[in-house]
Length: 171
Image (cartoon, rainbow, N blue to C red):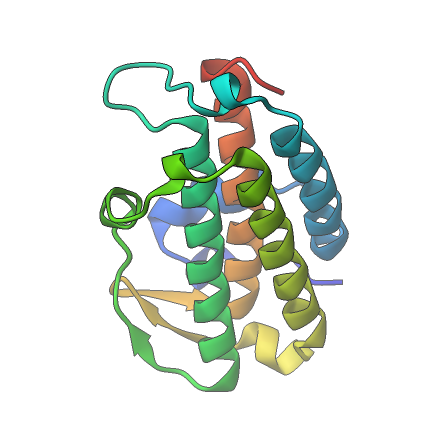
């Protein structure tokens, strides 16, 4: 079981994601979230997937694409830091979303990509040793441990699932 990271293992701005994760087996949580999120997104129709709750806000498709991009970014950082401590650049979510064409894709295709990304990351996370989980590196000018990044993957998804429920009226 991967224990919850200490507050000195991640940037203060990441605390919101880490703190959303309950005291549970985080890999099992990632597996459950993968299935429930896949079911949620793959059940949406085109109109629901194209919905944005306000002008200038992301559509459901864009938000899901953002979730995929962010998971890949956090997972890449975890992989790199598990192998060696290095410094990686920041990640501007708006640049990523604005330079993708998520709205031209079907929500079913994005749901499949989300599930495939998560499954791949679960295999990677299960392969980390205790020593690797405690390794850290710098990203966005802040220190992050591998285990903190694992918790951030789960917490980021939980944050957006709450947003989908509250602002997009889907759950």
